Image (cartoon, rainbow over all chains, first blue to last red; front, side, top):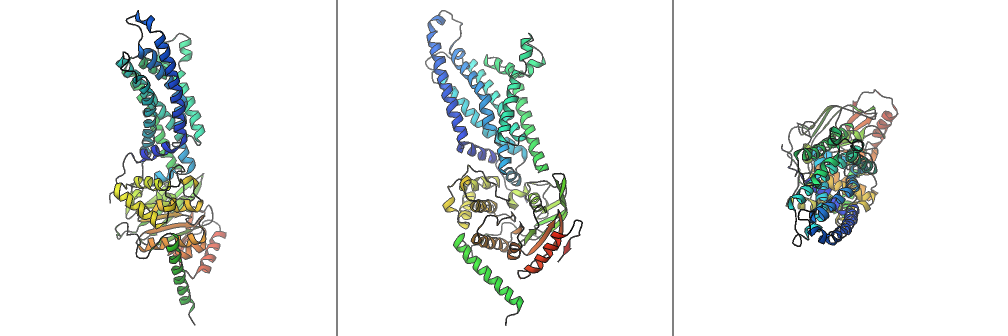
Length: 256
Length: 288
């Protein structure tokens, strides 16, 4: 007897639906996009005000350096707050409401539950990024665009959001309460960002401690430098977090 | 003068007729519209538990439990609170792994192939957990997708179960605002949506009013008549005598009694149950 085929995206579809009908996702999107839009107008105003001065410097910073990348950097800062809030209840909430065993009882493997939920979160985060990017892109016909630099910065943001999302899902898998998951995800993300602060203050700009820090990898991408090391760092963090979340779910089913 | 046994049968028939009438009023049941047999009835028993054990919170919740359930049979799992009923049903439903022992579904090893649950088992957990932000209709769709139903098949199954359990007025209502009885009905609809061969019901009559309880009993009998094996846990003896063919009594995680149920031997079942409930541990299981 062959069991019925279940779409790999069945859990993603369920999570996406739940995300769209909950007010939290809409409120967060509205507030953060409004904040980013306000900052975009400020950055644009500064850019326009300094245009005459920059005209004398042919290799000076352009629209992407002064408006698009700083806007993406602000999105990165907001992500430290937004991602834990979006991910906090994906698994901790299911556990609290007793719906997690329903997924187990439907024969959905733990890895597919984690991946399905992660993809839904990632979809929301990428949509958030796309809406932010739409602001500078709306002016692409009005100014000169450094597409390479913008692509590198966008790739950095995508990798960062993917890693933070995975970290949030992992924290939600381990926490008994969504609020604990959010707090844990925030603390771990901030620790990963600033793990090298002490070393940098001591004048160390190299070594393993700097490699461990998220800031090292994102900042080089925001500057337009794409290196395999940076990409691998984000991919490793994402895979590790998702693997830990899966292990925790398997243990949940074992322990009951 | 009607003999006692015949009187009992006559009473039972009356109860069934009354229940059917109530069901037709309550949950839209119409005669000759029983759900079709969900799977091929083979020679293998629908469910075979062999030496199933599971510890929870550091103590044995279920110990060396062996049970057999045939297609179309209704088994009542009876026991006091903490006897191990819910743990047993969670293991059968695939939500919890046993520490040892085996579970066979239709002759296949369930622990080796947990995906069998998707098609064969419908589970209504205690207190019917739901996603509060989804509507009744969305719940059914989500359960359908998780059970491998898509497109027209899902639409047809959803319409059928909504009609069958009279959920039309609630279809667009959020699960979070449903009453406990309505939640229970939605949970039951989710469990029945994919026409499972084994229906696992954990305290299904919780929070239902007497009319709904009668409708539930008829639904269970209807499922059994269509070949679905049903296992339901309860601590209510009346529930067992009303719908079950067999009763298994669990106490402190072990099987203490496994035997047939007759609707007219409520007093005997009550005596057995209280004997077991008042006894200590390490009593062997006995067949009636």
